[in-house]
Every structure is written in structure tokens, then in C-alpha cells.
Image 1: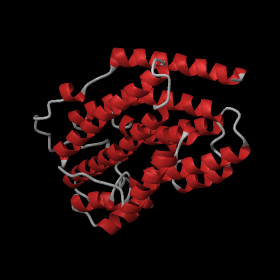
Image 2: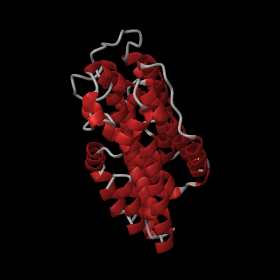
Image 3: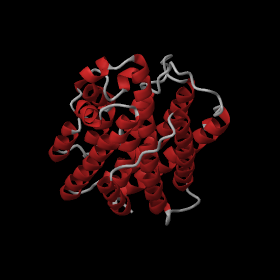
Length: 300
């Protein structure tokens, strides 16, 4: 073992130990905190209106307040249920990565804590989306196949950078609605719990990526950077499913077109992902080829 690798391992163990302690002190349980039988206020949104995929478009301007509220609820149900699909993939990658680990290490202990967190988050998202609209969404068959390939093949920096990006994008969207008094109290709690616990998951993923990228060659760095960027593109393009627009009572083709060309949404994504892009640049995963993908996905 090299001196560098030994130092990285010690750093990972120290970070993991602190994360385990933090989880013990401050983890929360949506099953106990949220009154799932409480009626929802029909005048409240599911996200800050500015985070709707259609906000800032002509289509949004044509909608009544009631239609806008309904739209955000279906949009957020899509984000949450697609989030479940991503989180289940992330759990499988973490379990595979830790299968041969030292089970007494802090790294293994926090990895299992993260899997347990993700299970609770998935249940929380499922209950919240069911409560709001009763609809559940899945990615297209093509994306589902791509996701399965990614899940079964990604490892080291590709796996953990993919985990980091999925968590960062959800975090940005949820953090943007915390504290907004037009948003449903139930969603406030969902967002607060997820943002709190995902902050630990993102720290863990960053340390894993740093460790994996230490001393890698140019070919591996270039390949990994592109694979991670393609994973990010898959996430961004699938969070709000076209069927969610249909279920909200909108014209699917017009709504999807408005979302894809929405400059306001693009700016919100770029500003929310500044720190993510800085981190990827820091560890060598923001190569020119990867940059092209992030720019067309409006993350950069």
C-alpha cells in the first residue's frame, strides 16, 4: 500500500466515523414526524413555483393558480418516484461495493447507514406522492435499460460520482423550496429530512470519489468523466416524466417542449450545480468531453 493510499484510507475512515456519529445524533423518521392522514391544503404548492419545470414559460403564464398548484404536485410526484428508482440503484451499487469490505470499519458502518436511510427515503417519497396525487412514475424503457447497465457495471469513481450527482440534483430542487410558506407543510418536512440526511451521503460520496481518483491515468479519467456526465444527463432528462404533465391536465407535447426550452429552468439548474461542477473539476472529472454533455444538459 502506498503512503498516499494509506493516508486516503485513514481520511475515509475518519470521515465515515464522524458521519456515523452524526447519523446517530440527528437522523429523522418521516413515518413518525408526518401525519399522513392530515388533509392537504388545496391552495398550497408541492414546490416553490420557481422550481416548476414550466415556470417562466408562456404556458405557465396561461395557467390559473389552481392549475399551477396541480402541476407542481404531479411534477414533484414524478421527481420523488423517479428518485425512488435512482435511490434503489444507488443502494445496489453501495451494497456491491461494500460486500467484501472490512465489516468492522467505519466506512462499512456508514455505507450500511446510508442504505438504511435510502430505504426510509423511498418509503417517504412513496407515501408523499401517493398522498398528493396517487400517481407513480417510472423512466422510459430505454432509460431503464441504460440504468440497469450503469448499475451493474459502474464502480469506484463512476459509481460514487453517479451517486453524488443524483443526490445533488434532488438536493438542489428540494433545498429551493425549504422555508417557502406557499409549499405544503408535509413537503417541507419531506424536504428537510431528505436534505439533512443526503448531506451526509454526499460527503461520503465525495470522499469515495477523491480516493478513487488518486493517481488514475488519463484514459481512465477521460472515460470515467464521460460516463459520469452521461449518467447526469439521464437523471436530468427523466425527473419530470411526460405523463406527469398529462395527469396534471396539460398538453403533453407542448409542456415537454416548454420544459426542454425553458431558459429559467436552465439557469436554476446551473446555479444550483455550481459547487457540484467545482468538485468534479477539482477531482479531474470535468474534462472537455464531459463539459459538452453538462452544457447540453444545462448543468454547466
